[in-house]
Length: 83
Image (cartoon, rainbow, N blue to C red; front, side):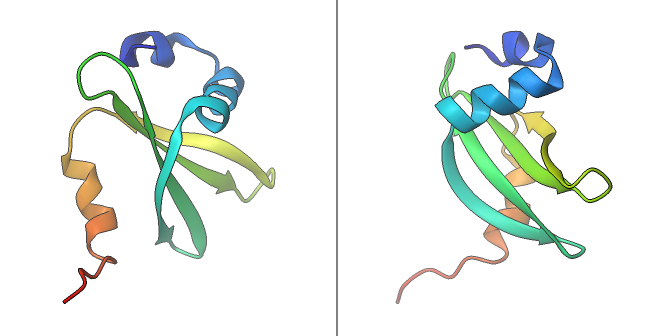
């Protein structure tokens, strides 16, 4: 699936597609909620999707999808490379 086709899906279908076809990569903490990062294969390098919990509805939601590597820096801060 391409990034642009993914963005045209409804939020419910985006979440379904990510959970079934995405590859889990990492987790970071935003306030007190965890945000999970997934990679989705597509044209070129594919794209990334962040899935978090909507505290008001207490259910998983797609928070953001992107192709840039800049947002990945939020995840790199918590990683430690082996010596």
